[in-house]
Length: 586
Image 1 (cartoon, helix red, strand yellow):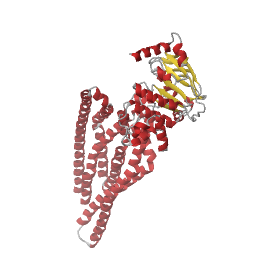
Image 2 (cartoon, rainbow, N blue to C red; image 1 turned 180 degrees about the vertical axis):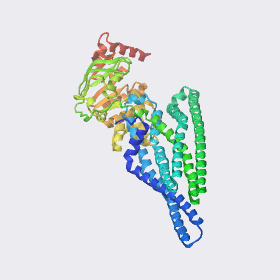
Image 3 (cartoon, helix red, strand yellow; image 1 turned 45 degrees about the vertical axis):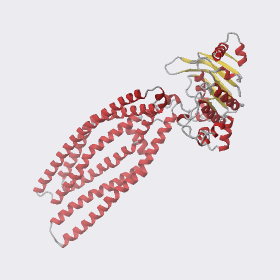
Image 4 (cartoon, one colour; image 1 turned 60 degrees about the vertical axis):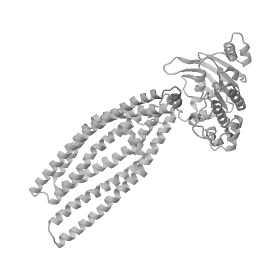
């Protein structure tokens, strides 16, 4: 998926206008018709004055009746058309555009790597997504304000030119000068608006971060600290907002004064033309209507112009994460991964995190079909990185990672992830029902299969004891369940997924002894004939593995069966095992 355009204006055109060109054109035509009717009403009103002024006669009466009929028709349309224009804009343009932007922005966020997401504040990303989806205001200003104003200016100019060429030229000059004054008067408030949007995003991001970790905040008694920190950000935001409002008020007042000068000048000139018999009384009425209507529109244009720039600045600020290219992307014409044996091979793999030393340099490891391999070693030696590379959370800098002889960088990520089931150290659950959490990632699965998976994971017992059983909500991140219960739900999910490759990432390290035994038995039920990679801190959980690989500084320094490594004299694994045995006896 391609990033969004970097320029806010280009983004509005390519994502909001171009895909909806016909509804957009329809809105413009309706606005043009509405403007035409509005100005026709003013024009007929001025002609009515001239006709009445000419005196009572049969011809004048006949003409007055026709003009009154035209005014009534224009008035009816003037009431009816704006509502139709509004309904059409909402249904055909605003709602579909917002849906498109929200959908694309969320797809783009999900397209980023896990590493990218965890390094960003969730609240900030959501705020940015909301910023760029608020395009209905931009479109409203473009269509309803700018295009409407242009239609009004053109129609009024044509009508004024038909009355007197100098009146028409003066009107054009006033409009042009007002636009120039408006542009430069709003410069200071535009800069402050950008600062305001940035401050708002930071505040929202920190607020969501604090609320989502409310349990930690309470546990460490840091509520006051978080409130003070947020209070400082809020004060900065309010201060910038106040300064922005003052700047806008000054610019609005300045532009308003200039517009009133233009209005008075044009009225004085119209009176002069009337005094020299160059225009009629009806023409004076038309000029008055333009001054009261047209110039007042220009006055409001100052407000809308600021709104436009503020919203455009907001969209520009919101585009930042959607301009970052996806770190991990499928190659062109990538094919689905086809897994038959589930044989895994790391061949001459080189990898380093950005701006850090290499973790793996010419690393080799082959895991046979159906083999259970335990990965052990001290922290920071590459265990978790190894399984992350297998899931293609990062791209390697050299070598290949193969599954059944297929390079994982050449296949679709969706098929790669589908071939694996992962049970992490801390089970990740959604604030949804237990049924939904177990069935996550599997479409159209029956209740019978969900229950069977739960039984295999020894989860059916505690689920049935809950008030709503499988329909019970688990709370935010599964907070209503114990650690062992959450792990059993994760195992049930893996059972249901039935993937040929199983990854256990410290799946029991955070559990108490009783929970560990239950979860360990549930994992044994899951193993079957799958190819298994198990990262474990507690070495006792690896006794059922076919082979154990000991990593140090990204290299394999020992490998063998559990019993062979324990008995091996002075082996790193044996030393670690003895240390854990001593700790267990304390």
